[in-house]
Length: 122
Image (tube, rainbow, N blue to C red):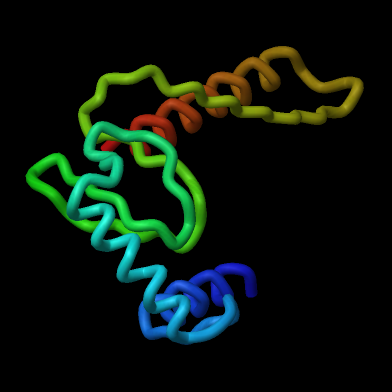
């Protein structure tokens, strides 16, 4: 439901509808954001924070217009920055579990996490 509402509000903002006030106000706001993004508003081609409903210039292969429906952050492609990834794994075993079996499970889990992180980098 949250995703559906975000998509609906994003579409509404571009067409002048949505739940955020008058239609002409939303359309005017979008037009202002687009003009600011194209003619001097801060771009995000090198990354940075973004706010919902505001237009930004992005693109590693030339300028592109991006109007997010939710606030967030642009990460520049190939920036080479450090990513922090926190993974919490809770493993419960019987009191009499075999140490070799627990060690094997740990190794399998470590391989699965490494594969998942590597797949996210592609």
